[in-house]
Image (cartoon, rainbow over the protein chains, first blue to last red):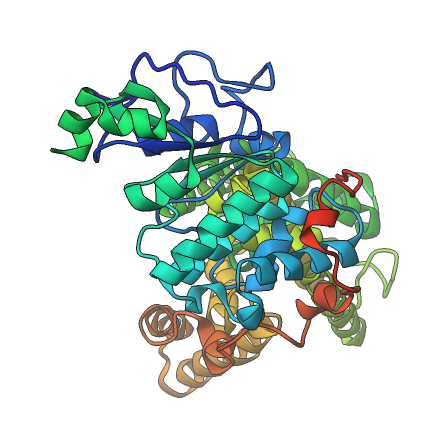
Length: 226
Length: 302
């Protein structure tokens, strides 16, 4: 994937096992968000992206979302002029027929992400951390099997960070959801992921168990420091 | 279209003109009643909206505005040059017939026109009300708020933008049919010019784009005001065209003082809509379903 003369993602092969939580770290400009944009169909690159054996590169973002890949954004996106509940309802309208079920599920998701007290508040009025949580609630309405979280801890209060960790682990354990989590927050990512993938300059420089990757010399040199 | 999907078009005069010309050409050329003309006009406007929307709705804001304006101008110039059926720059004049519902011509008493327009207004408002609580309405608004978030929420952005454009084009074309039947004379500069476009867009912008009653309130303020100013200054001082100044001032006021329009500014929601149209979908909430149980229990729809 190129942006003018800059190669953002290059010669990268990454497999994410079903029902796992994988952490993706790397310095700024490593290509982490570009990778998520490629998987979610926002960017089109060269090479192939497969989801459960089916090739999905070239598909539109909405088609990829319907296939079962949900994503959040580094800077939370959403429908500011709609309420939090409406934000969670919108993705469900294309999936479920029973509207009462959509609303029930929307309310349940807001409760799960500690937003039930602001369900009738406009999304634009939420704090940055709350918007992150709403982003996740909205994605979960799609009932995706693979969830791509882009910097879920960025600008989030420590208590909310703990809640995010707790929710991700619960969804992984109880519902078998697969997560690929991009983050610079090493302590939080350590709590979440057993497997850590490290990118630098658009390519993969390390991939393995979290503790092993932390000791990897290339990773220390490129990202973690001494 | 601008209110729901956030796609501002300066090309709707083209759809208005298509509606007016379709009815006029069918009646004067083939004797086909304007009632059928409405259906044909709606179909033509719908197809035209796809034709112009498909390549251009992928463009953002200002670029789409320019494309839509270009489309309208191309159509206007085409009709100016089209002498055989459209009468060129001189347009098409309706041959007068007796008071007739079939021909939609009422010369001795204009009251039927009033009730026809009132009916159309009510039907439009009902459509907008229904739309606000529908899946389409939510999708349109989601696209307006954030296209990328909408797309990653499973919404086919291009498809729903086209749908929004087609609905808007059809309604505008129907307005054009009524206009042709009321004035009984259509010509390119009268039905496809920027002046027409400003009369379509400004009332909605002044009242509040995306609001239920905003466009109606905007029209009730702007159109009579423009007419009064025009008549007063023309008859009293012999100065013509001052209503255009009113429109110009309206553009400045809307863009600087009340960008959300009168209704959008006066009734700015501080919190969400616990009442009103958008609450309808929410009010049907059943008992809570645990998140862990609800996953995978639904039947895929759509």
